[in-house]
Image 1 (spheres, rainbow, N blue to C red):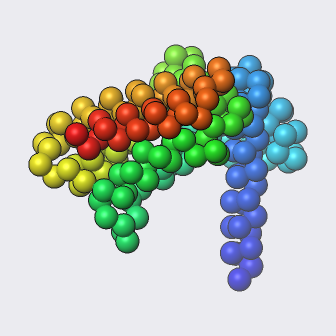
Image 2 (cartoon, helix red, strand yellow; image 1 turned 180 degrees about the horizontal axis):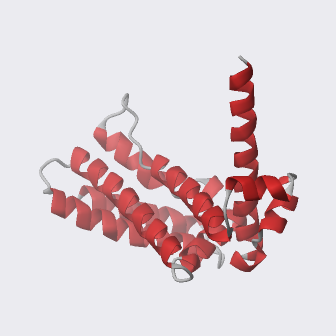
Image 3 (cartoon, rainbow, N blue to C red; image 1 turned 180 degrees about the vertical axis):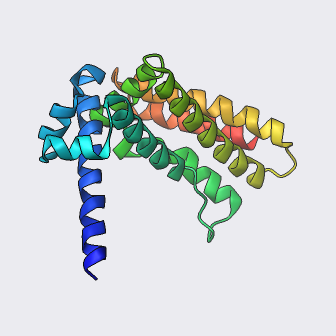
Length: 192
């Protein structure tokens, strides 16, 4: 029992640290992330941040991987739903209010910018995009089995580009009707 409590404390502290990195990235960009700033934001000792992460690159890399895991959940199918419903749900999820906040969209912009800032970040971002598009292509193929895997992959890429464009332009004041039209366009691409 005591080991589980210690393990849970470790997990909680690491989560606090990664939450702090994500918060600092969304508010201040990569320049606002330092080991000291993360410790302050997380409410933990600097030594604890250094204990879990060797340097800023590994710290930010861990936060990026956590965001990647979250992104992939957006396209996870519900085993109790039909393939068509799973695809529609995934296509609509990008327009959920949790993703249309200034904080989340600022974070998204920072992630894209980080891909050009360091080779490790670029690899993490590329792997995340690939996982997302592969999962989306799988949803498309399940809903439209007559499509080849390559055709499904092309549609997933086209949809991903539209979704990313939606996220970029929402920061500029895109109205809800335009968001609905973008989601409907993604549906047409997926189901045509």
